[in-house]
Structures are given as C-alpha cells and as structure tokens.
Amino acid sequence: MHAIFGRTGPHEPNILQAMAQAMLHRGEDYATHTSEEITLCGEHLLHSQDGAISLACHGTAEHAAQLLVLYQQLGQAGFAQASTGFACAIYDAAQQQLVLARDHFGAKPLYYTMLDGQLAFATEIKALLAAGAPKQLNELALEQYLTFQYSVLEETFFKGIFKLLPGHCLVFAQGEIAVHEYWDAQFSPDDNAQLDDLADDIEQITQASIAQQAQVQGSFLSSGVDSSYIVASSRVPNTFTVGFDTGAYYNEATYAKELSDKLGLQHHNMLVPAQDYFAALPRMLWHADEPLADPAHMALHFVSELASEHVKEVFSGEGPDEFFGGYHVYREPLSLRHLTRLPMPLRRLLGKLASRLLPTGMKGRGYFIRGAQTVEQRFVGDAKIFSDAERKALLLRHAGSTAQDVTAPHYARVQHLDDTTKMQYLDIKLWLDGDILNGAEKITAAHGLQIHTPLLTRELFDIAARTPTKYRMSLADTKIAFRHAAKRKLPPEVAQKRKLGFPVPLRVWLREEQWANTVREAFASPTAQAYFNTGELLRLVDQHAAGKFDHSRKIWTVYCFLIWYREFLNERLGTRS
Image 1 (spheres, rainbow, N blue to C red):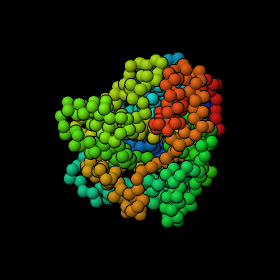
Image 2 (image 1 turned 90 degrees about the horizontal axis):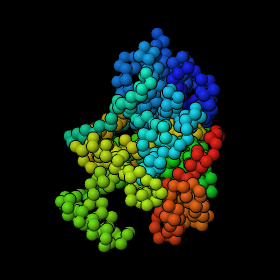
Image 3 (image 1 turned 45 degrees about the vertical axis):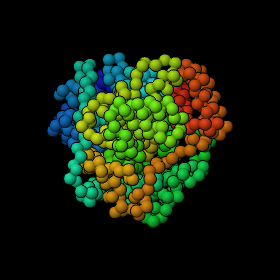
Image 4 (image 1 turned 90 degrees about the vertical axis):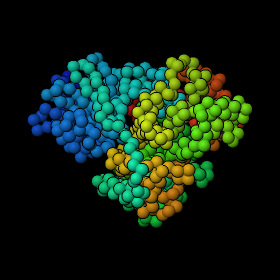
C-alpha cells in the first residue's frame, strides 16, 4: 500500500482495518507495528536497532532508511536534509512521542485529527472518516476555495481534520499537538550567476535525479518543456498523453507523438469526449478527498488510467514552473513596470477611472485596474476564480474572510524580494501543494500508479533560488535558465514551446445545451440552495451559454463542490474502484 496510517493509544484492529479499506486502491499489502502506545501502518516500516524508534514511510525504501538515520542523528532537524518526496510517522518510545513529517514541497499528503483523545493520521482524509471522524463541512474552507479552486487552509473541508503542511512536522506527546516548520523555500538571487553555469547545474541535478529512478518505464508527456526534458533525459520506453476532440489547441498528442517518434519511444494517447469527462468527475473528486476544480486534473485522471494499462510507475514534470518562473502571469510585474513607477495615489485614480469609464472587456481596462494594486493585493496564486466581493454575493453565509487572510502571512516573509519572486514564493507555498501535487499524487494513486517527480527536488530548487530574476523571466520568455538547459536535450522548438499543460475545453462544452443543462440542474439542487444564491449561479450559466462572458472556471468551481458534496456528505462513504 502506497500510504501510511495509524493512531496513538491501544491497538484497535477494527478501526485500522476500516482505515486500510478506505485506501484499498493504494494496495492491499502493508506492514504494522503495534504496542500499547501506538499503531503504525505503511508500505515501509523500519525500527532502530534498540527498538526505541519505529518509522512508517510513504515514499521509497531509500526514503525510509534515510529518514530513520537522520532522525536518530539529528532528531526533527534531520527532516530538512532528507530527499524530497516523503511523508512519515515516527514513534519515539524514549521520548514517548509521535512525530509526523511531510517533505519540503508536499509531494505526499498527510492528514491528522483527534479522536477520543488520541491522534489519528493517514495519507487520505477518507481513512480518517472511516476511523470515526465526523463529516461536518468547514464553511470557511468553502469560502476560500471559491477564490483558490482548491482547499487552501490547514483545516480541511471537514471540521477537525487538518493537513500537515509541507516542510512541517508535528509532535504529539502527553495529549498535546505541536506543529512547527523545519524548512522554507528561501530565494536568494545571485546577480553574478552566469546562464551557462546555471544550465550546467540544472542538467547535472536532473540527470542525477532521473538516474536514481531508473526502474521507471513511462512518463506523462504534454507538449511542454518540463515533461519533454524528462523524457529526453531518461529515454523511458513509454510516453502518455490525452487530448480532446475540439480542435488542435486542446490536443497535445500530435506534439507528444512527434517527440516520442524522434526519440524512438512508444507513444500512447487517447481523445476524451465531454461525456466521459463529466461522467468521471465524481470518481476523481472522491479520490481527491476535497473539492478540486483545476480542469487539468480530469485530464490527469484519464492519462493515469491510460498509463496504468502499461506501467506501474511514471515520471511527471512538476516543479520547474514554480521554481524557475514558468507561468505567464509571473511576467505581469514586468508588463506593469511603467505604470508602477507612478505614485500609488495616481495609480489608484487611474484604476478607479478605468473601472468606472471603460466597459468590461475593453483593452487596457484591466491593465489600469491591476496597476492600481500592489502585487500583494492582486495576486493570490496561479488561479483566482471569484473575488472577495463576488463570493460574498454568491454565498448565503460568509465569515467575512478575504483571500489576503491566506496570502498575507506568506507575503510578509518575502518583502525583500521583487514582485515576480514574491509570486513564485506564494505559488510554492499554496498552489504547488494544494492544487498541483495534491491532485497529481491522489489521482495517480487512484489508478494504482506510483508517480515520480524528478524535477521536484530540494537540490533543483537551490539552483532556482540563486537564479537571478532576469534568468527566470522576461517579457518574451519564461523559465529562461531551465529552458537553456533543456535545449541541450531537446529540439529548439520544443524547448521554447509555450506552456499549455493538458488544456481542457470547458469553455466550449459549457456552451453546449447538454452540459449547460447538467450544470443548471446541479445549481438548482437542494445542496446549492443550502449554500448559494442560486439565482446568481444560474445567471453565470446563462451568460456563459449565451457567449456574453467566459464564466467557465467560475461555473466549474461551484459545480465541483456540489459533486464533491454529494459524494462525501450526501451519501454513505464507501470504497471506489
């Protein structure tokens, strides 16, 4: 089983069996350590020679061995030196404490809750629900989700169930929980760094990371540089892509097949129709544990299903976009540079005038509105679905929270950095964990796949951290240093290709009568009426279907919540194949 789970207190076999059953899709075999104080379960279970320390690890066998040694030598400080890609539970009998830890970036999920005075933990929330945790909706999580499109708080959508944050560890002793951070992603750009030297270091670290995972026989492959670089560097025999039959923009299979053919690899691809996409959403959301409205995760569902027919382990290209500046939105501070040189009162005046006088959609309106705000005010992550004002109008009940309640503590740590780097830091702390890695790990695991992310390493981040902004981002290009390294392995047109990342034609589908009506039905449901202003929801659908506005992401975000609610809170929690 590619997971860990357990609880403090005397062994309760029925509870542990229920937890394992809830994660049966991750495998049936796991090791168990039991005592009067603790039960630890997982794929990798190790003990110190004197038996005082027991460790369950979600990761590789090498992770488990390394973590045991580091903990014995350094205690909790050892986690910072560990290789990325783990979550672990350690029982220290000498200290009479349980220690949970999650790797630097959050490649493996880990959740915990208190049940009858004991701490229970698991890789998936549904295992904690099976152990007896109450299924009570956290409406503050819903409020923030409407902006971020994923669960962004420590307390999950289920009240009383928490996620352990990346780079953090938890100590449970004498009935008390203490959580602290052991590592943070600190950018320290070196303006004297040379582009060729950075590319040398990127190439060396990438090759070493891939070499450590030589058993992997397949890779996801979009048309982007990250997965292409992995494939060209590893020469895995199989590549996998999905597309949609609504035009070339929504089908990356052609690019992926061309590269695979050039490298002599076997390419596998499939086209996903809208019918299959909508039908598979409940299963994806059940495996995600919480609402997750990034449309690309449904593409990941299908490409994982395809890959699972051929291999057991796959490479995936997460990491470089956040590390080296791969998202086009990171160029915004450069495009606004002329406006942001003006005094803030003048910028606010221009923004107010643009908002009042220029019609919605007119070129230049958004430029002046964005320029009237600081980066801390305008950027909450790679996706911003509903504004604070929009979600206030949408929800029947709201706590008065704002998106800045979530982002401000992170921005406060990086006030010494330029705006582009601030944006990258925020995405590493929130988006990378809550959306990208959370979806990638759970969706691949749902199909019996082990995902490997050779570009998501602390060593590669260390290179990005000292890369000057000019070698990460320009008005003409993104992740410049990373692309410079990739050009050594890839044709120039691939190394420089604009990022797409399994684009999904939601905008198109939601203008078709069948799917617009499917959403309308959900938006008129009793659940929708319990939480939302349904008139506002239906207005979004009608405006989108009429082609007046593109509300597809707003519609999808609410629709995903409603389908998730049906799966977890309206029906009995069971298992899914």
